[in-house]
Image (tube, rainbow, N blue to C red; front, side, top):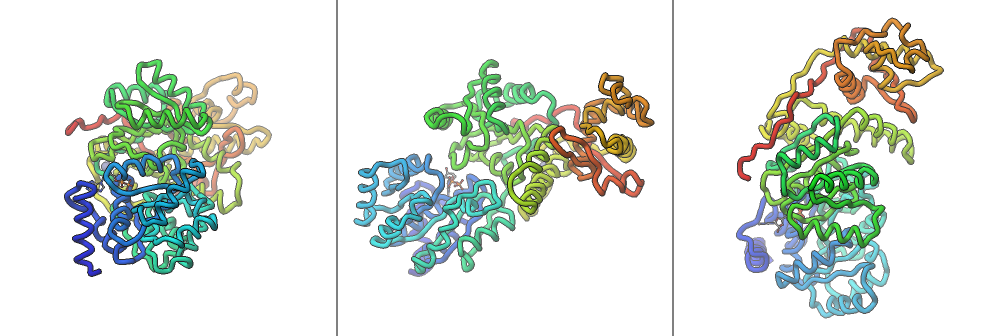
Length: 526
Ligand code: ADP
Ligand code: ZN
């Protein structure tokens, strides 16, 4: 087949089967490459249109397109949606009984399928491989390909076995797709999936209709409620919390305040989870409060906001989660509330996490990048794009563009705080967290201050020019800049090597001043 034929066939299928007029972005290039038998590695943000990149080649090429997907819960929906378009699709996974599987297998062997969705663990069964061998495979599509990365947040051991596809079916093209990828994950996918020869297609990661906002956390539930009432009344959205407990509490709080909300986390039984997810997809204006267990593969176009009440562990996670907003291209909000406690808690989780030192270092690097995004005084979007190795111009549609944060010379404040930490650290016997340090700076005669004679320290009361919340901001930003660290179960503050440069007046420190008012979404186009 020549390339011109490929393109006209593919375009015909796009129009006739899917009812769209034209390809988007790189879809056309990707599809013609795969139709011609080439391997491809596709990086495209959520909502970019990855599915058509393998669905159309499966229809154009001879044989059945085999799609490997970890999203078992969604296979039925995906297959139903395709069947509604007249595409002959089926799936094989552990939710089916023997009889249902038999039916799908027979359809495959009779070449009566265009697409077959498979859970990765099924492909590792010799019986499945033998079955595929008796029919004709048009291509292998490996969806959510970042699941092969052991360092990523969604690792699936079964994905490692997919590297063998090429040995068994050397002539069948493979297309791996993901919405998550730094250069490092990207390279790892290519290596682990044995895609050395694959052509790489990297789409822009910009999501211009999403307004990114990161605010400082005071009373998170109230801040959230305010956001929903003033800007997102009646809208569907997702609220992410770190713990199951805060998921439950936040969902309850929203319901009590008249906002329809349901919880979603791995501790709920699977029926409740499925029911809540189905309601979210079906109903207008429902809010799901969830842990990150929720959302992968969810295709709801009109999610108007994604709110984080706790700090995500990495920029990749943040980007994926916020990317679930606004798939329909309409203005949407990505809102994150973040505070000192987030930093303390996450550092502690890293310190106590399983895995070797290298693993912990990697988690630390992920967290540092996320903190840098939170504390930036530059455009959030530019910073996000840079993280993924892409360029951008200040967007005019994120909080830092709309209300440019001022920065201030915090060298003296930093010196005062670090010397207080130094004094406490040299006492050794006792470990103190941010609260005690700030009480000392403010000259508060609390029982705990009296008990340890901290009112006798030379630093007692030297920081009254800032408020308590400003000092918390100083601690948070020093932590984010690596000029201070936390240790142990109680979030003890300790100096780092770089602290010495500040104390020795060899380094200046600048802090971001929190804007007094949160910028509001531009309502144009709504
Ligand atoms: P992804 O898997 O990359 O998150 P999808 O494949 O689910 O994205 O596509 C996102 C949405 O965009 C879907 O509703 C899809 O039907 C739509 N879409 C994809 N390609 C096109 C196109 N060429 N023209 C119009 N709509 C498209
Ligand atoms: Zn911006």
